[in-house]
Length: 418
Image 1 (cartoon, rainbow, N blue to C red):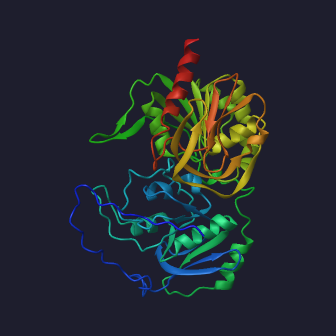
Image 2 (cartoon, rainbow, N blue to C red; image 1 turned 90 degrees about the vertical axis):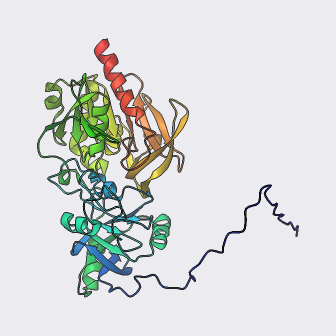
Image 3 (cartoon, rainbow, N blue to C red; image 1 turned 135 degrees about the horizontal axis):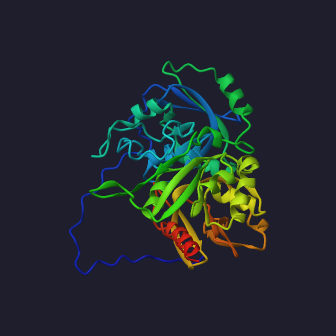
């Protein structure tokens, strides 16, 4: 067997040796080890995980996924695309900057985001941020979100990666007493997100206009005045920062409910139509949304879709979608834009994907995930219609993809000019 050695070379200007780090033995229990176990996460296969209950009390059933973002837990917990899901945070410090009203992403403030629960490594610490308005635990209670802490989230994440996203029940009871058999039965009986239309739970009930732009340091949220373009945004579970990005790009935005017909949209005489993100199975929502999207595409207006809007646009163009094993949930996903040959780091949140092998000839694949090669964008070759699977508005996440809103505006400018 060949052998080798490593030679450590001293730096030219050597620093004095640093004092040794104080380490904690691996078998030392965490500070919360003696806290009462007042919560359970029960998976559909019968697995029972005990932890510390936080947030609201009661129980909720949903699909257990994981999110790898290191920031923006409040934005994640209020993203309507997470309706029907229990989020496992891989980053351990959740709650350390508190919560506030500005970081809420649910555009329909009259409805909850739909997230069923949160799984945390460590209990929530006191907030340390000048923007904090309240403790996250209080915020969770107010929004009816159940959380469980003290969980080995790395082990749970590894399990999801290997076996897929399981259905489960998250329960919080201050007494620590649970009917485990009942929770197991509930988890096993839940049908899952495949075939489920969750958009009615998160869409707005009426139309409204939007002019608030992206947040600017020292100024906050300014208002768009005299916008040169009018966009109608179909709300399948809109995030507020999408609306802000559209306004910042020069758009007056009219938001309409998910069931709005193409005729009603076109009567508003928009310069372009936006198809929003949202939760659930695109094929299920597509039963009523796809025929209207096909009419909008045929109108010749510029159309831009994100996330669920991307998936349903693909269905409207003749492609198919399918459920993913673990989905994409995080703010560090590399995507290549074939139209520019550039790679951008993106924010993602989806459990379904467009089957790229089913894209018809008139549709060009524009973006692809560098993690697993799945489709992340498309455009029509003969019409101003395009969409992306990821979240270019971020919140949370990098801002590499803000250019897509400018691309949409450029389409509307050309349309008006000619």
